[in-house]
Every structure is written in structure tokens, then in C-alpha cells.
Length: 293
Length: 282
Image (cartoon, rainbow over all chains, first blue to last red; front, side, top):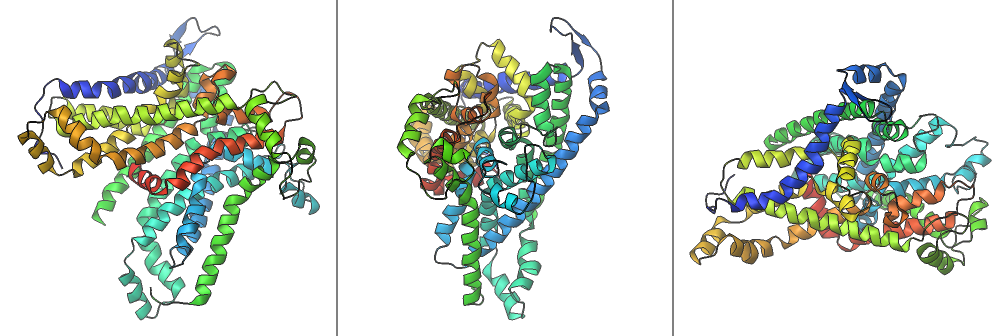
């Protein structure tokens, strides 16, 4: 929808746009194009000269076993976090949607972890599960379970997943609750009159009607795992042990920091850009569909 | 409601209480750890009740810094976090309300183009183009400055979209009436549009303040001097020190200090927070 009444100034609208456009060009388009440009070039060890090498950086990248490992890690990590945080949040949201007296209080108590920085969340969880001083590592030791996220890759992954899920529940909870509250009560009553119990009503009425919210959250959660969990991983494991928790985004950071393989790092950035654009496209397509619902 | 079963309510309370417990426990532990002395925390048998070192720990964390490590006190990190979070929130609101005003209330060549140029930024978070952005900021001599901490993070379209969406819902009669009263674009913006936008501005402010406060990767990269660190980047450096004995009680006090401002914003401005969260995601 467009406004039919507008101002006619010729110069003013451009002046209003200038601040945002300057910042967008300097800090977005310029670096993004540099990343694409750099991914086709190779710099010498001193960064003095660079030559055009075509797709060589990409070939090197896709010949690295570690790169496939980081892809696999990313896939495992995102599916675990998305599946766990979505199902736990849905469970809490369905309970909070019942007509409880204290529903408002519970809502407040559930949503505040959204405000905790990922890096801080990571620090809280490594403290809780630290092999030598963690309060929750103690019972694991009593059970003769050799818990050590600092040395064991699977334990490290489990810890990072728990911290990431913990932080994401609040967000999913909020959107699920809003989705549940927008389901018309008459539909549920009709189901009840037909003799469907609470469980049956949930799976045949509520869950299908909630699917737009679920799908939206799925995409948001995958994007969250890709980018916002950087702080968690860096605080809990630093990508280790032996690369067991190095996701694709973490690898861009680690490779660029270590050795200034800028071409290779840029090629990784470009691959990530393509993935994010694809995810965003899926999301927009879905939003268009939601309008018809 | 359909039917009312007391048992179902009891189950609901039980599950929600368990949920709140899971959500709160890590923070409770950190809070407890920040009240004990170093030996109690490191010993691995920390009690689950508060200790007696609270004031001392927080005083040392904020004003003195660690004893074994060469760590800086947290006081000025809190200051840096406040400045950059406020800068990001206010900066984004400023540039995006202006550009949304231009796109909605004016007709000019390349209007659609300008909108798309801004819109595309939604697709690529700063993490993806982290090193090239670092190089741009280094070339502009903005490493270790507040401008460097703030400006790359406000280059995004969320605010513009939010204001555009809101301006679209403002009745056209308001603009017609203002024009009959002889108001130009500045008067209309200042006297009519801005007062109407207060809630939207506040909601965006809440979301952006939390976003800015919680930044990690970007401040980590571009700050080399300790004096420019933010509190979120400072915590990790306390844990992974070169000598083995990290001072966990101080790190936990710092973690509590680091989450207090954004959590307070969510709890006390819950309505604005929820509104901002839901609307920026549309």
C-alpha cells in the first residue's frame, strides 16, 4: 500500500536517506564485495602483492577434510538445538496457554534469558559443568561417568548444545505462546464437542494450525545457531577439543585469525553468504504463503 | 475454555515450575558463586547457599580487578558497554526513522532502488563479512574507538522496515490536515509523526539496546586495548588466563553484572520488548 498524499520536495528525501546509505555502503556493500573479490585472489605471506587465482581458493577449501567436518558439525549442532529448543518451548507454551492464574508471572520468568548474551550463557554453562569444579559435574562423577567436555568432543558438543538451547527457549516460547493464543477457541470447542480429548485436540487441531509459527521459528532458529552461537562456542570450548565444536562461522573466524589465509577465509565467507541468502529466500517464500492462510 | 480439569492445571503448574527452575538454575549458581571466596568455588564442593564474600567480590570485580591475572577492573567495561549499546540503539533509530520517512512520504526517482539497497542488508549478518569489515574499519582508523564499535552494527534494515511499516498505518488525513495548516515536511515530522511513533521508537530501542549490549565477536576483533573492552568480551579473558587459577568467583560476579542491565530491560519493559521482538521479525 502506498501513500496517495506525499510531499513534493526534490532534494529533501535524498538528504534524509544519506546517513543510512553512507553507513550501508561503507560498512556493508564495500566489505561484502571485498569478500567476494578477495575469494578469487591469493596474497603472498606478507600481504604485499596479490594475484588473481580464479576458483583456486574454493578448490582448496572444498579439498579440506576439516571443512566438511565443520559443515557436519554445523548440521548436527543446528538440528539438535532447533529440535530441542522448539519442542521444549512448545511444551512450556502449551502449559502457559491454559487459563492459569499465574500465567503472566510464568511468562515473565520464562522470557528473560533472551537478554543474556550468548558469551555469558556459555560462561554460565561451562561453570556449571566444568569437569573439576562444576556443581552438576559432581553427580556425574559419582555415577562413575567420565565427564570431560574439555577433552571429549561429544561431551563438548553436548554442553554447547545445552547452553544454546537454554538461551533459545525463551524466544521460541514467546512466539509459540502468541501463536497458541491466536487459535480461535471455537475450533477447540468444536473438537471437544466431537469428543476429542486434550491430546487428540493438540495433534489434530492445535499443531497443524501452529505450523506457520513452527516453520518461521525453524528458520529463525537455524539462523540463530549459525551466527548467534559464536559467543557460546568461543566461551565454552573455543571450537575444540580437536575441532569437535568448530562450526562454519567459527572456522571463518579461526582461520582468518590464525594465519591470515585471507583468500581462503573470504571463500568461506562467500559460501556462508550463499547459505544465508538461500535460507532468507525460503523464509520470504514462506511469509508470502502465510498471507493466504 | 473447553473443559476444566483440576489435574490438568496441576500438571501445567508442575511443568512450568520445572521450566522456570531450569531457566533460572545456571544464573542462580553464578549468583551463589559470586558470594563465595576463591577456594570454596574452585574446590568443587561449593554449597548451594550464599557465602559471605559478596561485597568484597563485587567491589574487587568492579574497581580493582583480579590479583593473579593482569585483568582490568570491570567498571570501565560496563561504561564501554553502555556507550556502545546506547550508540547502536540511538544511531539505528536515527538513521532508519529518517530513511523510512523519505521512502514513505516522498516520491522521487530511485525511491525503490534506495529501499532495496537498504533492504538487502537484512540477508547478511556482520559475522559473515567479519574480516573485510574489520579491514574497512582499520583503514578508516576506527579500531579501538566507539565509532568502530557502533557504526558497522547499525548498517542494517530492521529499523527502516519497522518504521516504514508503522508509517504506512498512520492515517493519510493527518498529513492532509497538516498541509492545510501550512505545515512543511519538517513540521509534520516533528509535530505529528514523531509523537505518534514514540511506542515504536521505544520498542526498537529496547531490542537494539539488548542487541548492542550482547555483541561479542565484533568488539572482540576490533578492540586491542583493554580500555576499550566491553564487559561481554571481558568475561572470557578472566577464565582462560595463562596461569591455571582463573578467579571464578570474580568471573561469575562479572557475568551477573553483564546480564543485569539487559535482563532488567526485558523484565521491566516487557510490553515494549515483546512488541519490538514480534515486529522486527515480521
